[in-house]
Image (tube, rainbow, N blue to C red; front, side, top):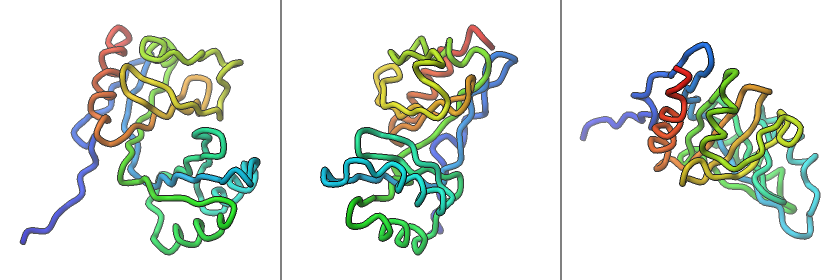
Length: 175
């Protein structure tokens, strides 16, 4: 039986870049979904602290839910330790295999995203560090503003090529 090699879903996509926009795929590192129960309504500080200790960033997914994201894969032992530390008020599951991240940045990034999402992208309404679940075109995406002109987009693996294509087309006038 031949050895199987993992191939990132956007491996064949070269970054798109101009002076106004850059679209690139991000490493398929770690994505853990954490859910707190109703008896633990405000676990944000605890989740953020535990994520930081594990070298991950905590991003809001919905009330009492977060995505813990890192550029590097997390070992099974480290994931197990982190998820155990969340108990009994929250639990989590590894989503690294099921989600793909991309980065859209540059002075025209907001203009590009405005073509495909209904999120108010004004920096006062959607400041750096804020995350939201939205549609990009017809696909559900997790959008995080990393900086004023810098966004991370996470989508389910099966939709990554479609979203990449949509973002590429929305970026054409700035290339």
